[in-house]
Image: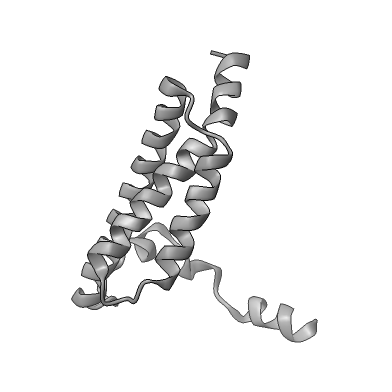
Length: 115
């Protein structure tokens, strides 16, 4: 335990600031481009999940079927080779829509309690 606390005591508290968080010079441009694609993909998956939840609010499609469909698309995504990027992105978006529809009943309940 002393080694753990001595590590944090030896570190300067001034190294974490807003300026160091904005400093992207240490990240190479290739890694920056990759990170942009990763976060764009996550943003699109979040939007697809919101669409799935909205579809449940409109047409009441969420339930066990969408939960099993979500699990099925995740398993299919994990078994797809990394070289098929378009297929993997499509499966991720489908999984996000099914996941959003699966949690749609919870969102619907929250809306009914406090609109």
